[in-house]
Length: 297
Image 1 (spheres, rainbow, N blue to C red):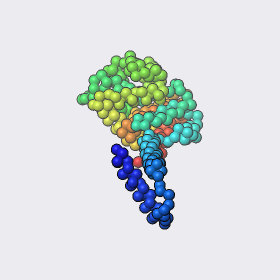
Image 2: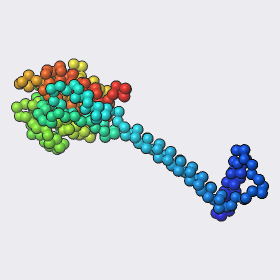
Image 3: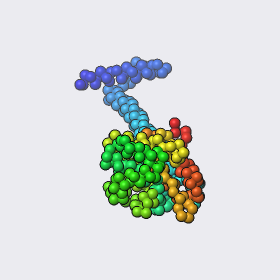
Image 4: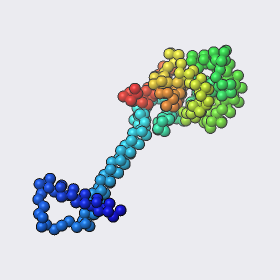
C-alpha cells in the first residue's frame, strides 16, 4: 500500500512539474524541493475538489430530475382559482382534480353542499351492478349502454331496481367512505354529493378487477356527441355528465370522470346556473383550464 501511495505521489509530482513547465514557468534545479508532505496535501486537496464538484453536479442533476418527474402538467392552484373566479358569476361550484401520476391536486369551492348528482349518479349505479355481476352481457349490457352513453333515464331506473334500490347505493357509498353523499328517496338524481366524494368513487373503479374496470370505462368513453361537454373536452375522456333543473329555474350541471388514459380524476359539480347551456359551458371551461393547451398534446 505504501509503495502504491509513493507511486501516486511521484505521478502527481511529475504532473505538477509538467504543469508548471507548460504554463510558461521555469523551475530552477537549485530551487527548494517540494516536500512529500506538500505533495500529499496537494493531492488530497485536488482530489477533494474534483470529488466535491462531481458530487455537487450529481446531486443537482438528481434534484432536477426529481423535480421534473414530480411536476404535474396541470395548471397551478393559484391560476386555477383565479380563472374560475373570473367566470363563475352567480354559479356555485365544488371541484376536485387529482393527477394520479404525481399526486398533485386542484380544488375549488364556493359552496360545499346541495349539489344534486343528476345523471352523474348513473356512474354509481353502473359501478354497483358491475361489482355484483361483472361485465354485463345481452339485454343487461344494452340497458347499461343506453343508461351511460345516451343517459337514458328509464334504463337507469331498470338497473337501479336490479341492484336493490337505495339500500344498495347507500351501502356502496358507505363502504367507499363517501360520507358527504346523501341519497334522496324522491329521486336518485336528487341525491347530493361533493367533488371529493365523487373522486373516491372514481378511485374505486380503477381498483376493480380489470375486466370490470375496462367494461365501465369503455361505456364512459363512448358518450354520445351531444353530451360531450365538461370532461368531454379533455384528452381521452371517460366520464358521466349530469344536468337537472331546479324549481327556481336554475340548473345543476356536473361532470365526473377521467382524462388522458385515467391519469386525471376530475369531479366538477355546479349549481345555480342560469340555464342548461350556461352550466354546460361553465363546466367545459373549467375542465379546459386543468391542463394548459401548450401541455395538452
